[in-house]
Image 1 (cartoon, protein in one colour):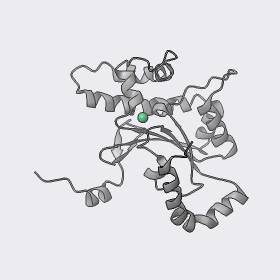
Image 2 (cartoon, rainbow, N blue to C red):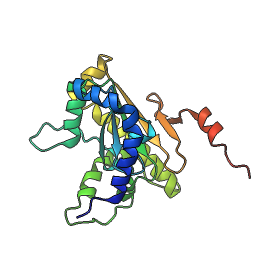
Image 3 (cartoon, protein in one colour):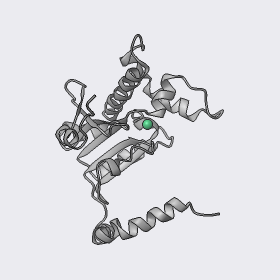
Length: 223
Ligand SMILES: [Zn+2]
């Protein structure tokens, strides 16, 4: 069995690039332990790596990723809850100061939900997982006359809002938010454009950040 070639090549690039410049930091983090102040809940999508989008250094982001960046509501049963376990560690042990739910455009999980896609296996793990976003879809309402892409964008953004709501169902997390020790944020990454938008908690609207830099670096084509 051969280890994938792109990974070996990528690792070689890491050795001559990041590791060379960050070696002291890695050593320091190994000794002192990690203390990231920001936790990101993102999608598994290979185009939306939070460390890449936010140009994060080692030790800066505590990341949990799953299909469609969902946070299941607090459920203190004896089942295995991956996101809850990550939240427990991030909030109670690392005491992160910010949690960012990072949604994105062209999310396959959200599309699978919207199109009620055929299960990929008899277990239909994606279908069962994506049922979590039903309350977000209810808020958006039926597609009506909207274009498919506008409708999916609304669903993707409502899904971020739902995950933020579900975070607040975790009592100890909520207590930290209410004490002002923890802030929750929603963000949305446009895969095709590279634009990042942040959710205004008062209005629920997403607004592009660093729009000035973006406009300067990527001017709109003139027709
Ligand atoms: Zn996705």
